[in-house]
Length: 147
Image (cartoon, rainbow, N blue to C red; front, top):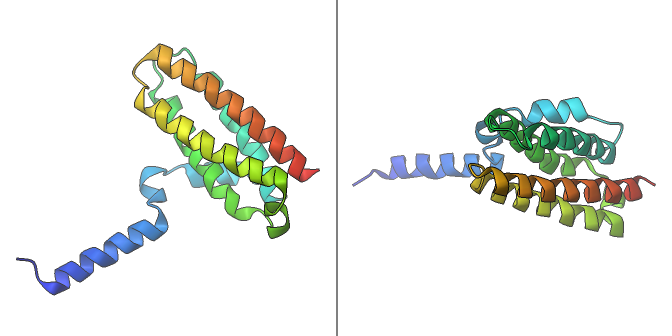
């Protein structure tokens, strides 16, 4: 039905999209937030991002018009995920950073659930509260890595 050339093009496109993570398509402002949060080290960048995320959570909580704020949070959480690449190998081997990595994954999972229930204000606010707690714990773990 399809030619082999078309199949190869589709495979190549899928590989490119998979390797790039489609970050520019689904998280167009993540790079902007990552640049704004840039610290002297990868750990400081992540700490700065936790501050930005907490401000975003406060802005969205209890709001009827939440879409723009939730989109901003989405980009900030993705920027947090990307910022993990800037941590030194020595820092990455610490117990405190292992905890931070786990918390960062939990934050992603909580945000995913938040996105699913975003139309229900009570559930949205409950997930925002949980997200805020995990972000606070992440900051504490990152501070421990920083020393």
